[in-house]
Image (tube, one colour):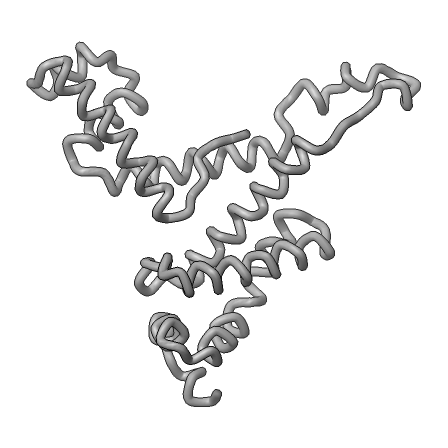
Length: 197
């Protein structure tokens, strides 16, 4: 075990994938405090944080065994993203499962500001999706990236985009279509959820 602790994350990942199960123990031990603290700060409930932490580790192990790890040199970021996605999944499920009756309260519960404004969890999910999309856009081919930036960040019409880039409207529309397809594909490969509900 002592020799393994000297190895970089990437070597430990390769070792685990090659069949050395002790490598995953070293990786988990190395990053558990950071991962658990992030989850705990996000959910503010120790029991729930422990559950999500365990689910994160299980998903990491399954993903490694299935060959779905491709983040060379960024193991801890990859694990944190898995944990973050599980936190978002938890809040989504909770939102869909929770039911409330107005009969149990002396005041009109459904006229309460909490139910008219976005919840903290909704804002957290939405903000993370915006950050994820911005990161994913940087991975697109240059021609597609340019169309996305002009359309969604500068608010140009497709006619204006076509003029700006010196292409036809159909070409601009086609690049946007391929950009969306590629964003979905990259998001799926990186296990990033881009939906709010």
